[in-house]
Amino acid sequence: MSWTPADERLFVHQEAPFLVHRISTWTATGSTSRGTDTLLAKDTGLNNLTAQWGQGAWLLQPGNLATATDRHRQIGAPSGGNASDPSSGYIYVPADWGTAPQSGDAYVVMSIPSRIYFQQMLKTAAELKLPYFAPYEPFTNASFQTSSGGNIATWSVTGGSITPSTSAANVRDMQQSGFFNVSSGGDILKSTSIPVEAGRDYETWTKFRTDVGGPFYVAIRDVTNSAEIDSSSRVGHSYEGFHTVRRTFTAPTGCREVQVWIYCTGATDDGCFNYVTGFTPMNTREVILPTWVTKVSQIRKVQLARYTSQIDANVFDANSQVFEPGLKRYADYTVRVNPGAANPARLEFDPSVRLSGKEIWMEAVRPTSDFTTFTDDYAGESVTCNAPLELFGKLHIRNLCQYIVSDVDPNDSRANAKLDVLDGHLRPDGTRAGGELSALIQEYMGELEPSGQSRRSVPMFRVTF
Image (cartoon, rainbow, N blue to C red; front, side, top):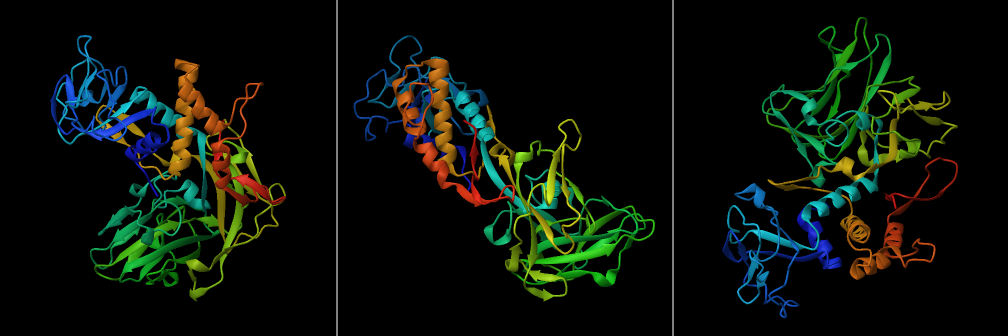
């Protein structure tokens, strides 16, 4: 389940209220030197406020404000007086806002500047490694996955439209599907051109469901010769459940590039396309990995997938997909890394491994930052993240506390106490042991076979400490 910055701040407020003191909204329009929240003194736990409440704390207005530079302020009296007036609900700032805080606008009171809070969020996103499991080609091709090195914009349509869909009903694997909305019979969804070699045999797999009508067909277009390759071998279906179709072809004489063309014979039908793989030569022994793979350890496991339930010719029930036992690293495949190359990593298969008629799937680990676009500027914020909020939030709290004790006050009692809870008590040698985070990370551990040599527990969520 995805979460937003507001969700994450609420989590931090609940777990470490000394970091995020208050999350509320202005109950009335204030002035350029103060905001008004008449509930300030009435909220439970805040009924003993003094006129110095909030002095030196930082105030964030996270919304899209009339004056963008009004987003961040430090709390304090304009002329050395009181920082707040709890009885009236006033919170003062020494540097005037350009536009008075408006009734109904959200505000947050923090113990550290909101920009540092955000920078530590970026640090957390870079440290928290998430599992990424997908068929080979979506690792390097758009295939409707915006986080896989491309986006839906790489596909074009002749009639109709293609838009992303993240609805659970429309997505079988990975983050999203491409929703192909057909406006008239004969509309076509076209991939980018992909280089091939004349005379070689290729195969491609497409996983999709029809939302309305159908059938949808997968065809291969010879771009060089402007002709469809073996039109009688189009393959498709009209099932509303996800099915996978396999299309094989031989590149004809003179063919140097091909495209996937997806047709629909209906006039106003819809299809949800999860991914399109390919084109993998049937005798391939080497595949190029995406540029974000720079370490051998990032590829945890390689598996071959097949289907046990064939519905029609080259049409398989997606729910019948089974994975063969993991291939053994070094015996069956090797990840070879050359950091200085344009394509820094590649996967090499042993000649004994039979790949034809099977999908190549890989399990990797990637930083949360690869899956999430974090935006925080004077115009507003934008974060939608699918990492587990509990794990991300506690790691963020840990980084905030470490920032406080390392850069602000090494004797801060609250930050040190929270580090004791999260990382365990400080030992005489300066290291820490145990704590909530260690136990929490264990909950996200799975039984994997990263090398194929033996079964052992490997953290699916890797955290750099």
